[in-house]
Length: 387
Image (cartoon, rainbow, N blue to C red; front, side, top):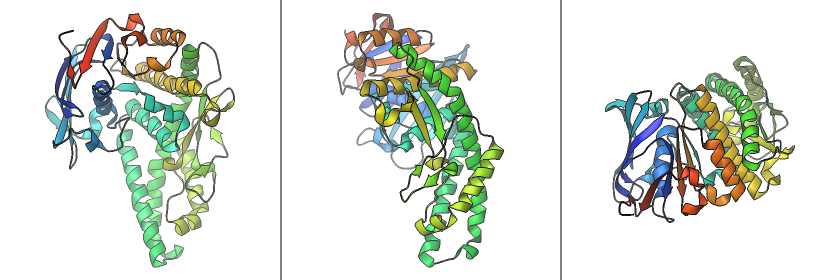
């Protein structure tokens, strides 16, 4: 998969941008605040329908404009696509492939990318929600139909929570909550499918993370990951489950359905009291391990950075191995500034085989020479052509 041309209109600080990109590594250089990260953020949004920097889409629309447009020409095995998304400040976003309208959530079928940025340090050190989003984004890139499954599940959780809140406010008893059984069935149906797919993905991803971490740091530190499932956890008085079992093996949909149903029954009274859905994929977590200890809380800054980078490199390896559309576009946003010389060289060697790699840097000298054959300089939301 190659991005051959990028056009941006009213995206972040770009009033208008038109940029040709070649295969192999491309180094995007510019001082802080000039628009390097904005450019790669646009490509990341096209493949994941989300930003790694903000939680609301309208933040990416240039000030005093109503919509931003990302338009990208893609190429694979002599097949060419024109992918476009319009991010609206108000109202739903719109998408097109070859000028024909599609549902926005179908875009990941046409473009696959893996982006690593400094914000990804929160994958190791931050809250479970970030890790859930990471695994779900990768799940959608691996199997785009899960975009709909996840959306359906989130809608059911929202409706179920509204019903629980209404029941608590009106004093309705369990026997009168017949509608809740209907939502429970849908919750379990969608949720069990997500739990099973996540477990299969984690099982495939774990050895790749271990290998990628070793390539980056030059030593085997036992990097690992496993699922922490709320349907087999006890719960305290907070909104977070207390993990009692980290699961590394694949869980079937049937087993997930059985465990999910039993978990809902066990927490029914607590859910009514608190008016919130306490178990399900929306409350699960990933446990990252390093040297036999949880990476969160024990890993140093450098170890956490390397682990987060290993997660993204492992994701890219999974996608390139399974995708019929070729390698995902690998995007490294301001990565090399945080690495010492030896790790920079090892990272450069690890990514050398990808069809297309986009790298941003504020300082040209931070990036190994082998990755700087093609250079784009960005200044004030535009490409510098006179240097």
